[in-house]
Length: 262
Image 1 (cartoon, rainbow, N blue to C red):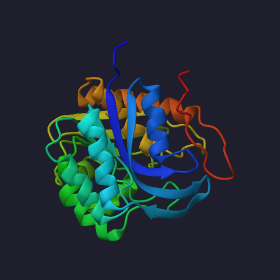
Image 2 (image 1 turned 180 degrees about the vertical axis):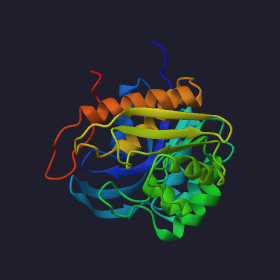
Image 3 (image 1 turned 90 degrees about the vertical axis):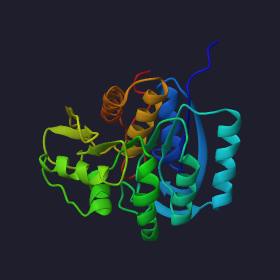
Image 4 (image 1 turned 45 degrees about the vertical axis):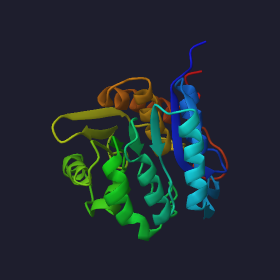
C-alpha cells in the first residue's frame, strides 16, 4: 500500500474538538494525507469559548518537531495557535530552510473573541514567521491586528493582501468571510496574479474551526502536489461543504463537519 503524503500541524489543542490540532488532524484524514502534530498549547475550550490556555515550553515544541521531521519527514507544514513570542520564534527557526511548503494561519483570537496569542508575539509573527510562509491565511480580524487595515467591503481585500505580502509570505490568502453579502469571498495573491474565490454563504452558526480547517486543507493539497492556486481552491470547496454540514454541539458555536464527504 502506498504511503500517503505526510502533513505536520504545529498548533494548540481544542478540548472541544472543533478547532486546533483536533480539527487539523480530522481535515488531513478526510483529504487522504497522514497527519502528525506538534502541540504548542493546551486549552480548556468548548462551544462557548476558551476558559483557559497553557502554552508548552519551547523545548517541548522543539523536541516534538525534531522527533517527527527527522524520522518520518513531511511534505507540508501548517501552523496555528503559537501562544507566545518564544514559541513563534522557536517555530520560525525550525521552519527556516525546510524543504516543504508552510501554511501559516496567524491565529490571534478564537471564534469567540478569546485571545490565543500574546500581544508581545506580534512582532515575531510579522518578522520571523510570516517570511517563511508559502501561504498566509489571515481572516479580516487578523489582518487588522497584523496590519492596522480594517476591511469593510470586498474592494478592500486587495489592499489588505498587499499589506500581508509586505511581511514576506510567498502568497497571501485574505479570507473575507466576515464581510456581509450572499457570497463568502476570499482573495489569493502573490502580488502578481490574483485569484478570487467565491462560495455561497451558509447561514448557520456551526463555524467553529473554519480557519484551522481551511489552512490544514491547503497544506494537505500542497502535500499531494498541487500548486498554490489549485490547493487553495480545493481547500475552499472542502471547508464550504464542511460549514454547510456543520452541526449544533453544546450551547454555543457548533463545529464544521470534517467528514461531510463520507
